[in-house]
Image (cartoon, rainbow, N blue to C red; front, side, top):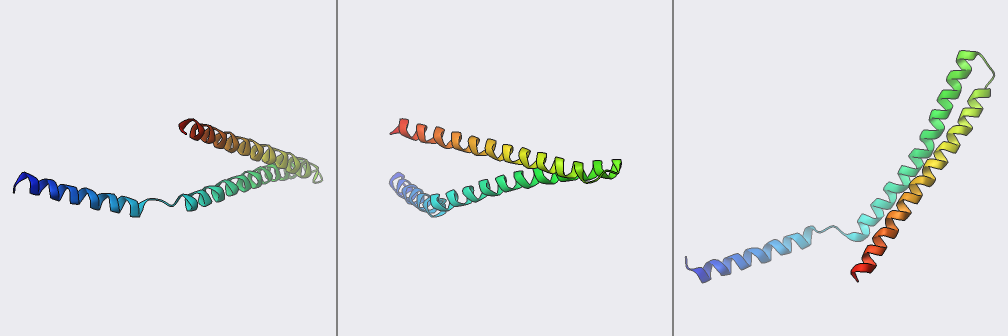
Amino acid sequence: MTDPEKEKRLAQLEERIEAAKKARAPKPHMEEHYSQAHLAWRMVIELVAGLGIGFGIGYGLDSLLGTIPLFLVLFTLLGLAAGVKTMLRSAQEIQSRKQAEEAERDERD
């Protein structure tokens, strides 16, 4: 094989590799959709986890102490407050990340 022939085959191979990369490239719109769904589920899980933990602690204390569902109600409300606080912290984290991405994009332009 001569050098021009090798170069021609190498160029063809590079073209095929680029075509394959473009075909397998992720779609930005779909990726954004899935990340938004992921964030929404994360927030729902944080809220439900707070409620569940509060409910469990309250029920356990009421069972141990033999009281009316005083601790159940109290700790369920505390769990709700903790879940909402965690959700707000997550939303703030997501917002600051998006602002940083936008600022970085603006700097590049």
